[in-house]
Length: 327
Ligand code: PSU
Ligand code: MN
Image (cartoon, rainbow, N blue to C red; front, top):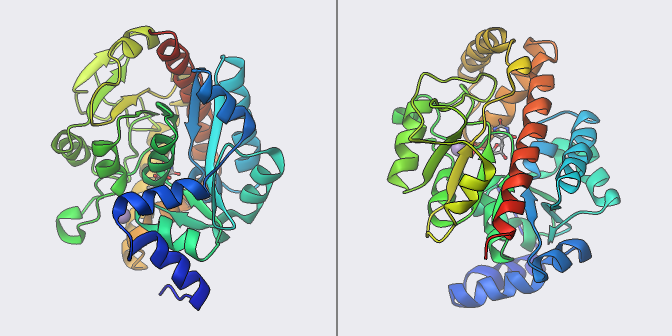
């Protein structure tokens, strides 16, 4: 249960209750801190790539999470774009982290609050540290006008969602935020066909990169046909982002890293059974499954995860650069 001191309660009510939604958003906007590099790039129309932070705090163990976060930022820079890792530090939404901030977030790991869109007012009001999921990162990225966002995998419709109603808010956030999200598809910890159906309901355009099939994170194929296919970052950028909804751009894991797909799939099945036995539900389920699959595969899944995130950063930067060159 969330609990509040009176000062944080008034901070929360300022953000949520006694003012209009527009005023609340303006208030939140005034609290946001944008790094000088990101701010400069946005005002000059240069390519910017947003990066989420739950993948750092909850998606990977320390210190590989820090190492990966730094490498992903370097890849973005090497490919001509400016990285903007997004997180909430001491209640301040930060767009673009410096080295010390990134280090702090990575070493705090799971003690940082996993922050989806619904959690933003609480984390800000209590001046807590929050690692933003895809839904919360989309919110802040769109607030400052970033058009491209790279991650590993997005949340989706969970298996057994017909009983639990567990559908990630990443999908509804994508439905209302005109940003291109580059991911390696969704993990088989989720129900992939239902996730694709729900993305259609949310009017999210889904394209696979150089493939006819929607990828399943650790493997190039999911058995589900991708709604559409795109063969170059330029073609993709040419679709422009003049829609109300987001675009999910699914990049299959590079071939040399997908070999362990079967091993990872059987570990996933076991982790899913354990989650049900131990009654792990709600927003604890995804981090539990990610960590357990990593343990069960002796780190093989982590290595594949790191490789695909870096590949997504490469393609996402190319898309951001191509977009910034469109007039
Ligand atoms: N899937 C991954 N790695 C991750 C996540 C999902 O392969 O790190 C994280 C992302 O931050 C995503 C969030 O937005 O989990 C979804 O959580 P939930 O299923 O509770 O909505
Ligand atoms: Mn959920």
